[in-house]
Image 1 (cartoon, one colour):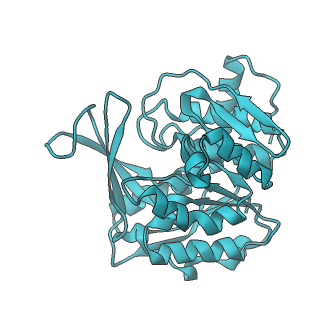
Image 2 (cartoon, helix red, strand yellow):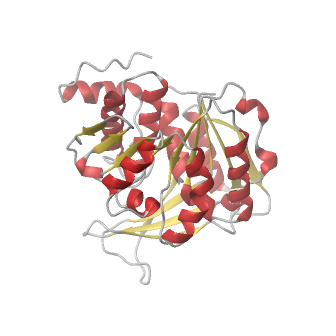
Image 3 (cartoon, rainbow, N blue to C red):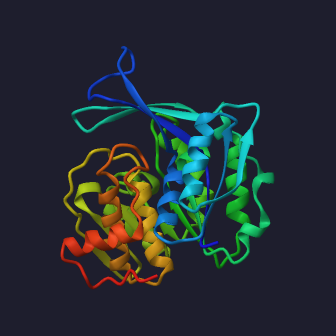
Length: 318
């Protein structure tokens, strides 16, 4: 495998209109296959990687919605367990005209929270290139956390561990999730903080200081800044990569798509700046359709997008 990931498999049910809070009746649409690592896996597979995912769904239509989508895009789903005792996890999301979102998660006591060490197939670890982990999954329950910790320790030292904290205030406080993330932070090689997360994880006064501090430890730190692009920090360099301007329809999953693209470029041997350009492009494309995975581009779509914006010197020829 090029990439292995693990975590909650969810469907997303979305409000159809802006500014509809959850305490009053209004229409929803869905289900859409979702979950941060599921989005990551789907995008990574569409971009040409061999990808596997570990997770659990219920024996229901929502579960089949997720598995069928991942399988159709080439993700190895052999380590997705179908639980006869739990329903598939659900995330309800409401969007607001301010750009804010509200979530209600059915996760801890759903199939998404039933991930155990026996689901880790040792064959998936043979010649593995990258293990991608997400901080929010550490907060689900003890079973999921212990399985992720075990996997984090089990991979060969040569395996790149990438880590997206993906902090969700709806799930746990920043302080609690920071403590949970510490074992993975110590091991990870590539870190994908969103704005304010590098500052929070290091206790320093700014994201820039936090990213530089972590880069000085030998990590590649990729700060996701949304419409302001991204910044890549290494021990020797800071690379600013501008964003692409697109019409945003649904921002859910943009950060996961970004990380999948950056890892793809890195594994394919692109220079770091080109990894950032690829990641920004994929993140931009991903927000142009409604639904967390519906904007996930294939490699050919990314090639066309870059050509349309006048970037023709990045060789996406794998």
